[in-house]
Image (tube, rainbow, N blue to C red):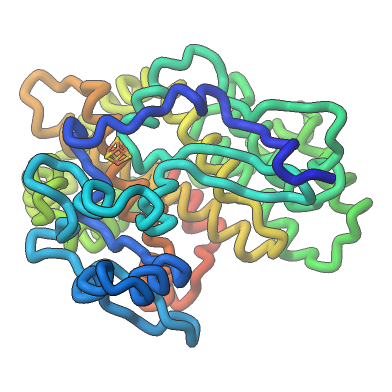
Length: 382
Ligand code: SF4
């Protein structure tokens, strides 16, 4: 089979166009940019490119060398020109860019001769495209291709998407149902493919789902103050290293300060009003969640799949918290769609594109990279 013939794209994939120097959250600032070995070698082998290596540092990760661009003191890429353009492209051309720079925000996943192309919500242009979609997001479907039926991990991903796109269930309970489903599979790790399909079929039954949802009522507002405090601490820890990065500063600094001084007792009253307003963005948030599931929940290792989904839940919790803090300090008690979009981008970068560091953090604080269902459910349902 010719691999390049079967290319399936996420909806609106072709609409993406980088706005470069006009971008509010340029991807050339504020995070670690990886240099793949092939690009590193190209820079090393050509005399006129050797100077680029002065701006590369390396770290050992899982016993392998990882090359990263040395960021400037303000977190920017040293190759970014004052006009917001890339000096490597200007001086040498696209072909000398690292794979990350060449492809971002495009994501490619290959499955048995099928290439799926999706987009990352770490790019504001992608989130803007998603925010204009009225319908539910999906990847092109070609019924002559059987790759989804053949791979257990894609059947699990399909079930996650089906749950998240269900009508009449809150986003919070969609997360609970999905995380619970993954946990149940973890308890039963010798599932055959046939057993897996049978198990996933349960989630097509309205009655089964109803019974599952009834179980979560016990977690609702069990101890709102305690779990709000937990989320607030998580928020402070996660953005600690980002709040002074110039590209994020305007949007993180004031809510960070507010989070540090927050009076937990006072917030409860405002939380109720906030919940109803935040629901207005369910469509945008649901499509971003599905987009992340389609890109990231593709591992055939169940633990890796759960961690990918857990990262999406953490992103959601921090986006919700950041938007709440912004709402709380707003005298008019309003939420703007721009704030919601901005925090989707920021937490996609802080959590989604930084999952190794987040996993280390979880191991440090919770002594496990996979958080217990009960704990996640209580955080979600404050
Ligand atoms: S974040 Fe997106 S729009 Fe902005 S510079 Fe990067 S690719 Fe272009």
